[in-house]
Image (tube, rainbow, N blue to C red; front, side, top):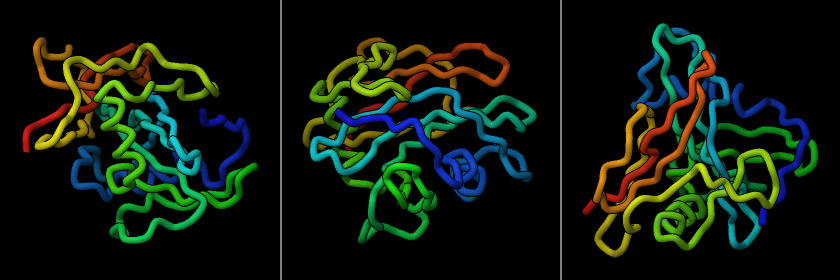
Length: 192
């Protein structure tokens, strides 16, 4: 199980995301710099213990209308080879682990493998801020991805119930900046 270090990161994840989010094709915010606030999420364990895996939900507190984004992140102790430059969210100095390379998880093979394992029932979602603590609020509905199926992340989150009978949906919650709780589909399994 991955250990959560209660320490500093410079720059913080939210500071890195403020510059990274507006460059993404799925970003729906206004023209100014977003004001991301941590709104929810969960972690997954890397079986090898090398890559930190976090699925963070951030809400843009500066947007005229509330917007929540799902940002999967892989935290690594060295640069990840063979990924496009835009996959790097940034680097940060971790108070315990040193320099961390933080990648958009859709480009990190460990993150994507563990997401698929979660959807197959072979991994357990972990609390975002507590070590060795499962997060029962993150649920999988239906069956997970097999051969011939892809996993599609919902980058812009909308409150919605999971579809009954759908083949593999990851459902989780977040909190809007005004304190209102929401739940929605974070990822779905789709045929290729």
